Amino acid sequence: MATGQTAGEERVISRRSVLVGSVGAVGGLVAADAALAQAGGAHADHAGAVQTAQAAEMQAAQHRTYPGSLSNRIYSVNPIHPDMADIAENPTNIPPPITRRETATVRIDLETKEIEAHLDERAMFRFWTFNGTVPGPFIRVRVGDQVEVHLKNSEDSWMMHNVDFHACTGPGGGAAATTAAPGEERTFTFKALNPGLYVYHCAVPPVALHIANGMYGLILVEPEEGLPPVDREFYVMQGEIYTEEPFGSSGLLTESYDKLINERPECFVLNGHVGALTDHYPLKAQVGETVRIYFGVGGPNYASGFHVIGEIFDKVYQLGSVTSPPVTDVQSVMVPPGAATIVEFKCEVPGRYVLVDHALSRAERGLAGYLIVEGSENLEAFNAPPNEHDSGH
Ligand SMILES: [Cu+2]
Image 1 (cartoon, rainbow, N blue to C red):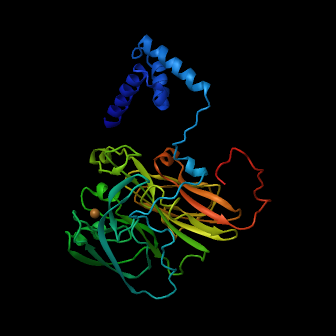
Image 2: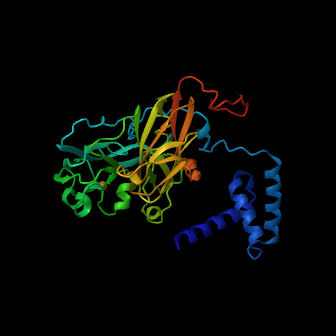
Image 3: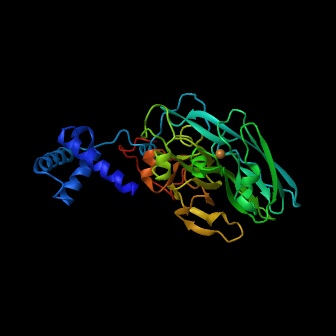
């Protein structure tokens, strides 16, 4: 099994690191090796075990900090990126609620574009996109509408692309009908039969690769009566990125098909790239406002335990169903790949809140977004004295 192989490789590397005495530089590997030495005497020779114990003592003697830890950005402000090509979708880029009370034909124009853009402060990646952003545009229709999809594959593309709408009832969600070579355009129509929040994505094989490289978005099919009004709406999607180079590498990175099919991503992202919703497009609201987040998982592989640090979801429309009553007072919501949810909460206390997948190892691989709430203090709800260890405010 692939994961077993890789775990074995890591063990070999960590043991070699200990034996050559480079332990100081690789604290995580030392810890792994200490565990290995304890667990498996047959694997740990005496010299290695002694050195491992010494290294563990050294490690315990100093108060370790992890200045490179990306979860620092959960609680502290991150430096701003320099201007570079950016595929991040602005989370406020959402069409307004639909006010008409009759059905209509709605034309959707999607252009598939492959764009080299930055993945984090140091790295670039060739993203595959709908309309040049990840996620693709937020589409808003009303139940009963005829949706007329026009999919154009840019002349500059290297790959075939198409689109599969989960909001569509019909074979492939339109995928076969819209498969287009570079420079071609395809159309199909479907009737939005079921209200809800749905994912759309490219479905050209290997489908997981097209999704991982950025080809996903959300379509909201409003119920007849619409959704209850809120003060602000946001559009956020989670995905994984698989590169040959390890997380944190510089330069133009290469996609890894091997890591993709073994489900071993290097990056986890909100809205396309590391830092998209922290450095470029933090969400913003005022105290007293009610916020709604349309949250989807493009994936392709990992479910999200979606959570906003410091907030409680007053309402959750589970699995994106708007015809079931929302559940109330929820800390985190599980969102499978190829699915979505709608969360709502009132902002009662000013400050910075952080959108995460509560599988928080993924924060170390890039997954975080900010919600900045401004307004008057609410000392009844939250009253905290200053703390010199708090570097982030
Ligand atoms: Cu594609």
